[in-house]
Amino acid sequence: MALERQTWARVAGLMFLLVLVVDLTGLAVTRPVLSRTLMLSGSILTVPLALGLYFTLKVFRPITSAFALTCRLIEALVGILATLVGFDRVATAFSSAAFGKPLLQFLEWNRATNFGAFIFTIGSTLFFLLFVRSRSIPRALAWLGLAASLAAFTACCMHLMRPHFPAMNAVGWGLMLLAEVSTGGWLLFFPLRQDTSRPEFGSS
Image (cartoon, rainbow, N blue to C red; front, side, top):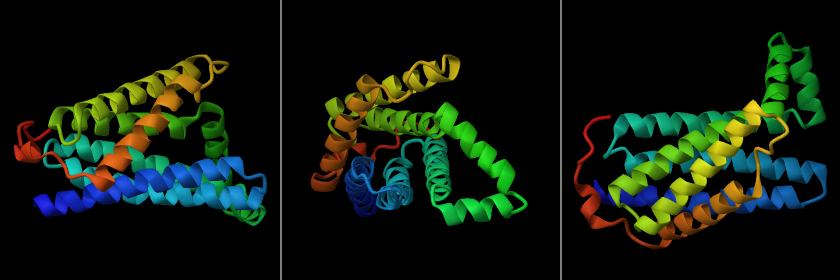
């Protein structure tokens, strides 16, 4: 069990770093097709990232871990769909399909509200809360991730209430970048704390 959790933790650490590299590169490049392809890859890689975090932390609170996993998978699905419609052929196929118009309307609403980012912040908050409670990683890293997640969550909530407020503000998302890089590096290169084998949180 401990070996399995450690393996999943390393998967999560690697995916943390890969998703960041791919997404940041996708935002930086100027060629639209390459940018969309990289962003699509980042959304796809979010799936093994979410699974890695889930299987690392589910021993402590399976229900909370499952809810966090669901949020991250919804985030990945929204990101995949939102990126796909950026390709002309895909957008044309969606617009001509029976389900296409509602889907495109949802994606337009997602673009206006940053719904995908909002869902991400919920999943991230729950996963880092479990890291804090479980002491699987150094507490400073866990608390940094929790603080960053809450700051980003607050920004997204403010944006939903007041659209002129930027959901992707520099404070929350700058902290998130630092938290994910440091947590990803720790999970990839260092073992989980051994005293986390205690199922001290109950079943929720």
